[in-house]
View 1 (tube, rainbow, N blue to C red):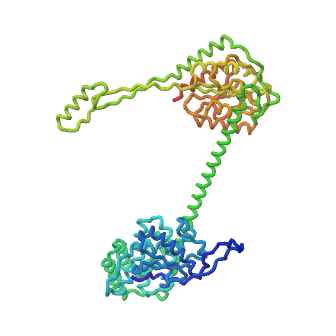
View 2: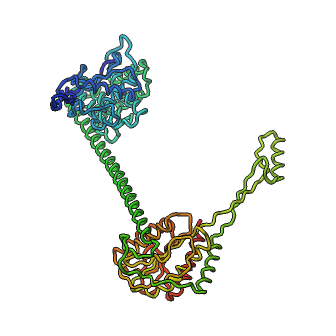
View 3: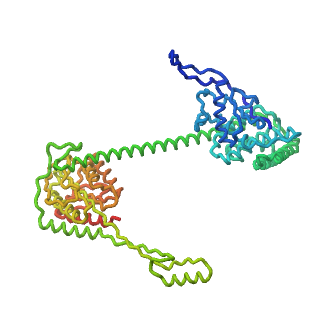
Length: 599
C-alpha cells in the first residue's frame, strides 16, 4: 500500500536543537541554535515513543526531517514499518522547543499533532495489503476509502483525539483539492469521500459539511451520491485485515463511477467549485474549533477564578479564625480587664462596677432553669430491633413455623424466627450560651437585668452538665468579659454600667464564637445579643456577616431590644422586651429551646 494522497509544499527548514552547554574552563557564552536536519532526530525519536500509545504498536520507526520522500506532509509505509513526518508542520517552532514525549506538549502544535494522529490511525488500522496483480485504480479507490475508515476506527478507542483529527483535515484534504490527481466526476467523488466520509464517522459535523454535500449532490446527482455514501459507509465497517472486502468496496466504487459518469455533465470550473466548497467547510470547522476552544478557555478561567476565590475565602476564614482566637484570648483574661479591638488593654472605659451576692430570687431562677435544661436535654433510649435465623433472641413462633414449612417444601429457608432488641442511651447534649450586651449610653436600662440573666444562665448551665459553657461580653468600642467560659458555677453576680460610645459587636461575636465553639455542631448553641442596634453602616455590615456565619452553622441567634426605636439586625430572631426585668426569663426560655432542638 503506497503513501497517502495528501500533498503539501515542503515547509522551510527550521533551526536545530540548541546546545546550551557552557565550557567550565573559559566561560564561553551558550552556543546558539544551528540549522541542521540532524536536530530533528530527537523529535522523531520522541514521536516514536508517543506512537506506541496512539497506535498500540511497538515495531514502528518515526523519522522527522524537513520535507519527506513521498512529498506529502506525512506518510505511513507498512512494508517498512515507518512513519515519516515533515518537520515543517511544526513551524514556527524550533526543534529545541518541541518535546513530544511530555504529555500535553502537543497542545502547542495541534496541526502537526493532528497529522501525526492521522498517521497513527493508519499504523493501527491500515494493516491489509494489496494482493499481487490487483487493479491499480481499484487500489487507489480503496486507499481513498481508507482515509475516513481509519480515523473512524481510531476515534472509537481514542475519542479525545477528535479535535486533532479535525485540525488535520484542513492540512490533508485541501492539497488534494487544489492539486487533484483525479479529474471530472471522479474528482468530485473523491472530495465527497474525504469530506463527507469524515462527517459520517463523526470527525466533522453535518452542518459544517453542508457546502460540500450540496455541491456534490449537484455535480454527482442524488442517486450516485447515495450509492457512493452506501459504499464508504460499508467500508467503515470493514475489518483492518480484510483486504478482500476492502477491494470489493473499491471495485463497487469504480463501477458506480463508470456507470454514471457518461451521463453526468462536468462543470468547466469544477476544481474551483470544489476548492471553494471545501474552503467553506474548513473555515466552518476552524470557526467551530475556535469557539469550542474559547468556551473551554472560558470554562477553565471560570474554574480557576472559582478556585482562586475559594482559596481566598479559605484564607480569609483562616485569618478570621486566628483573629477570633486572639480576640477571645485577650478578652477572657484572668484579670478581667477591658481590651481594645487589637487585643491590648484599654486605658479607660471598663464598664464593670463590682460584684454582689445573688439574690434568693436569682438562685431560685437558676435552679428552675437547671431543671428545665435537664428536662429539655433528656433523650429517650433508642431501640434497634433485628431478626436472625439463630439465637440469641426472642423466638417468634410464626416465623419458626414458616421456616419449618420452607424446609419441608425443599426450598431455602428465609424466615428468621429470633428477634433481638438492642437499647442504647442517647447522649445528653451540652449547652453553649453566649451573651453580648451593648454598653453604649442608650442601653443603661439593660445593665441590671442582663447582669442577673448572665449569672442565672451560667449557674444553671454549670449545674446541668459538666460540658456546658456560657460567657457574657459587654461591648462598646472595647470588650469586657463579664463571665468566662469555664465549667465552674459563678459565685457572685458581676454588675456593670453603660457609658460607652460606638460599638464593636463583630469582635464580640468572634470572641464568643471561639470561646464557646458556637459554630461547632453537637451542642445546644445560642447567641443572645442585647442591643438597640443603632450602629453605623460598617458596624452593621460586620455584625450581619458574623450572624449569618453562625446561623448557617446552626447556631440560634436572639436579639433582645428594650425600646421601640431599636433596629433589627438581619438574621437574628427579634424579641422586644418593654420591661427590662423580663430579660432573664426570655434568655432562659431561648436557651431551653436551643437545647431541646439539638439533635
